[in-house]
Image (cartoon, rainbow, N blue to C red; front, side):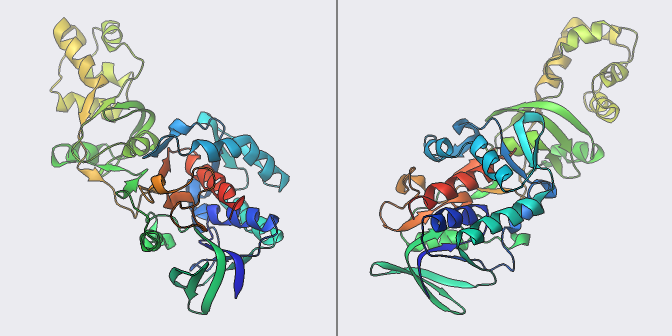
Length: 386
């Protein structure tokens, strides 16, 4: 079997690349070991598919080279995505924070992506076990259980290690290393942060409590935080996990934008616990009062004590034990080093005809549609040249 382009991975980036290549008249084969295409897309956004964000900026991405994403993003904006998706019959709706979701859920987007690739002429081969990929003269060879496929160009679109329950592995990184590409350190991203022993009981008794916060430390992020039986989760924590490194402390502003000293002064007769419950979930207010040994009325607090309480709740200390692993992480941080990849074509500079796209690259976006949009943008960027 001979093709112009072989794409390894039938996820969002691989299918976009296939559609773009095939539209240029290239013969394209898309190989994937899974039984169906776009499995991660089907699970994205809890099945709702947060497909893009109306306010995408290069600063929304973590990458060894902060300028790397600019070219692909400039050539495929959120508005380009919306024109494309709406033209294919995919309805969307925008929610807070610029998050754009598929109105009919993730299955609609997965079906659309596969249909776009097939209608352009790409051949999608699910259930194909890829054993190796190598260069053989001027051609690339992908060895599978059904035989070898030769092509002039090879695209690695196998994603990262996150969501192993959906079939994710590190095989893409193994193949990239085999072609001499460097891999930056890998770790789970967009994931929960687990509590150390000194905070474990506190988090456990608050499991299920959610509130808006602002996190600082290695990063500055805002959004909802959710206490769990094992630590903290929620959108703000997921974003913070992109920047957090083992051992780094976080400071949680539990009352962003509130002048707590003034708020306490307005209710001097209330117990401190009840005064805090005016602005915090009741369970959290009660737990904080116990942890900080706060008892009695607000009027009994000295000005210094009120100031110290405000300082504590605006920068509540939390040093995670570790990030939750790949099984629960939405993305893999790190990947193929972009120093060896063209930001315009996504081609490996030292291996002509080899392209790397999507999550397999050292590019990770914040929560909110940024990673799926990168899959689209990088897939189309490579598809214009492969």
